[in-house]
Amino acid sequence: MSKILFVTSEAHPLIKTGGLADVSGSLPAALKSLNHAVRLILPAYPQAKEKAGPLKCIATIRLPGSQEEIKILEGRLPGSRVFVWLVDYPPAFAREGNPYLGPDGHDWPDNPERFALFCRIVNEIAMGRVGLNWRPDIVHCSDWQTGLVPALLSLEAERPATVFTIHNLAYQGMFPAEVFFRLGLPPQLWHFEGLEFHNHLSFIKGGLAYADKLTTVSPTYAREIQSAEFGYGLDGLLRHRAADLHGILNGIDLDEWNPATDPHIEWHYNAKRFSAKQHNKGVLQAEFGLPESGDLLLGSVGRLVEQKGVDLILDIIDQLAELPVQLALLGSGEAHFEAALQDAAARHADKFSVKLGYSERLAHRVEAGADAFLMPSRFEPCGLNQLYSLRYGTPPIVHAVGGLADTVVDATAEAIKQKTATGFCFYYASGDALLRTIGHALALYAQTPKWRSVARTGMAQVFDWRSSARKYLALYKETVKRP
Ligand code: ADP
Ligand code: GLC
Image 1 (cartoon, rainbow, N blue to C red):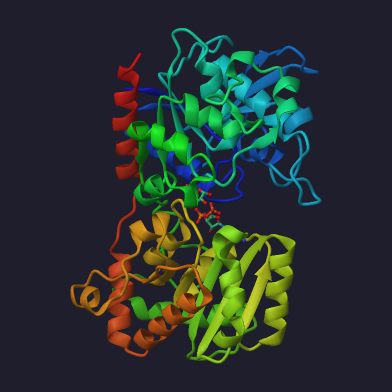
Image 2: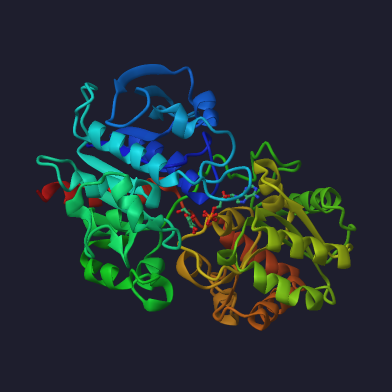
């Protein structure tokens, strides 16, 4: 049995901005069900405190320079037996809403202080210095907010092994060099093979340079980030660490995302009772104010940022409106994308509808009600929505990069014949390629038996957490062996 400290800045259902929360809410529970001791640690945001309760204070810590004592609160990850430890320091974390952004939509200006403090506390706990009588064998960190943990631990003797997972290399936690000195970080970490990146402090480099093992969330993304195109200047470091870098595909929560039992949808269905899915389409059209029609209804859910290829959708929206296609889109993100999408929806009210905002319930209803799911991401480390779509018999239309390439099989004539096709892929990020691929989906949609066969093949795919958790465990084992 291993003892694993799982370090994250968000975890569903405590707090979520994206897929990292889904992973952090599921993987620890899967590790626990394989009989390992797991503690999930994250900052004590108000929402997290509310949902993980009842809470018990199990330790208090004072760091040099902090205004007041920092408490470690113990609760539970809802729906599991996993203990959650919340780092409670109200000056940094008692803020409602998004964990990274203020109400003006910009990063909190003290993000480096907030997450450096979080990392320092994790370091103390990992080293068994706060009187908890529990020391991990493995500290598993994710994304830039936790990047200083492997760096700090690298300076400790008799430390636990460290694993760092890259969920998205585009977010690096970069700050001007003076922040490094303001934070009072150990000076020996300041060099170009350490936390320095072109005279900036890079939090993510703390993970990339110092963790014993690196992972990312799909095998293809693991290769892509070693290239200049996807590496954001860190590709050299990642090539240097290639022997320690592994791609492990995410799973999904098969209970939460199950069209046969989903409490958020009106009509339950499965691969055998597939025709009931059709009723959800009518419900979704009504909910989005679209006319009830036999058009191919495309659904889309996600953060409205460049990564997700929103601009490709906008590029073709007028041409799309000429086709027997509707689009129901749920998302929130950058103001200019929100405005452009609303504008397009106003121009084509009978074909295209947008709901801006974040709604777990509506996300489930889009997956169930749409005929096909649109995910034209410019890059995608893994992607979860295409996995939800496969399970909901809603073939995904994807740009074949990262995890999308690893999980969706294009409906070529050959793949349809062999019953391996699960969706529609394009290989070059352009509006034209996207439009052609939607055209391909439309042509297949007109042939109901073939369409259903593709949807059913998708539904039969299993992306479960247990098999991913076993891969992480094998990696932990290998990592602990190394001093
Ligand atoms: P990323 O982590 O890059 O945002 P993923 O596909 O891995 O992309 O995960 C996104 C997760 O966030 C999914 O669970 C998705 O349903 C959810 N999500 C994103 N935007 C919204 C939204 N506006 N409303 C509800 N859920 C959303
Ligand atoms: C990131 C990626 C997404 C991935 C998620 C969970 O946010 O953008 O592709 O699925 O993390 O690993």
